[in-house]
Length: 548
Image (cartoon, rainbow, N blue to C red; front, side, top):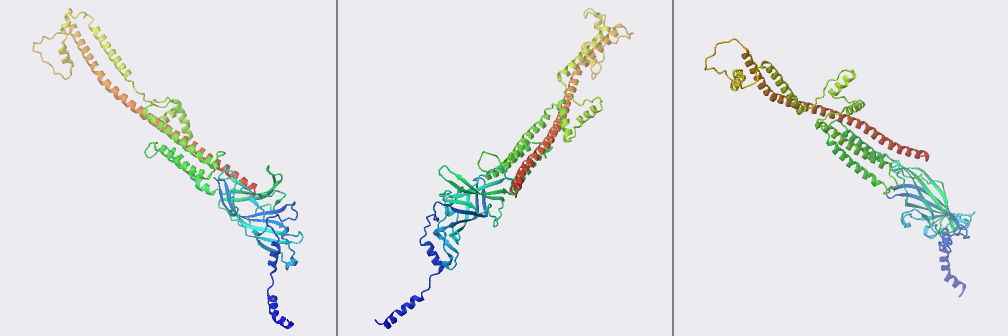
């Protein structure tokens, strides 16, 4: 074959080969880097040296802080940096290319693990994308920067003793799970967690963040492990709990105290105050359930708000019991028993303390004692029926004796009814009854009247006997009317005595009510402001300590 024939035959083919575009430098660089690269091997020429990994976090949002289950859910951006000696290239050979991005699954990655994570699957925790490679001619290695978003759910032992004025310290622990300190050595890129892009949480302030490096020796392994501890100092915003728990509880308790210890009700009695206490306790139990839903199920401590609500429940319970005692005091007056002098004296002191006016009869006695004047007897003692009967009997007997003595002085000569002729001069019994009865008409005598005679001894005897008989019959008519008057006086005495007893014990119930009202209001104020002041001091000191 001649030269001309070869030219005509292979000429077009050489033109096609010469027209094929060249391979891009970046693709050629990737091919050159990954052709002999194995991502399963640690990228160090000297395997005895560790790979230094710097770690940084930029917090984006705190999604949840769960008190009952004691964990935190947050969203953050993580950046890990290390040098890979197997991915180094000379920029002069590749048109001065110094940066390159490769998929994360094509290069070696450190197995950085969150030790206190509650999610075991890595795909649910972080989303890996591409890695940025920057060549370093001085170290003859490529700087790898792996940036990825994460949602971490990790455990945090919460200290809720001062809830809702609590401050929480939560720590995340990062390290390698398979490499000890001789394989991977971690270092913090900064001493704080970044918060420049942080979205403020509605329930928590971030007081301070801190990153600390530690070396820990575990019993399972001969070498130390390098740990990075990222700490968050969080302070709760208590406004929600103040408005929805503390203030309503305080108002309910204060209204219950006022209802318990008002002087009287619309009906004049106090029985409905017990039902008020029971209703208030039911409402407090509902609030207690709301608080218990926010608390972890632990017996180690009782939160501050738990002490507060428990104290309010105790105050309401004691108020209900005291109201029952006051009702018993009020109803005791219906028994008719007066107050003793000692109880009256003590009640006067309480009345002065509570600015309660005295009953009219007690105030009158008090004024008489103040001026050293004889105290008028305002007490009406019940008249004993037996003593009344005895006094009536004694009066009747003494009157009969006096009449008998007077009659004996005029009838000294009368000794025998059968032999004394003067006895026949006295009127018969029938005639005596007719002469004594004021309503009986005079009976005319059918026999001729004897001639008038001068009054002699016999006439005096007859007149004395008639007077004695009339006094005897009148004395037998008196006891019936005296008994009726005695019973009426006794009934009025018992009624007046009971009215005074009712007034005294009603006044005593009012004094006890006002005294208990003062005591319970003071206890309520001490509990309300004391417990919340303790929580506020702790809350404020934490802000000062951590620079919040």
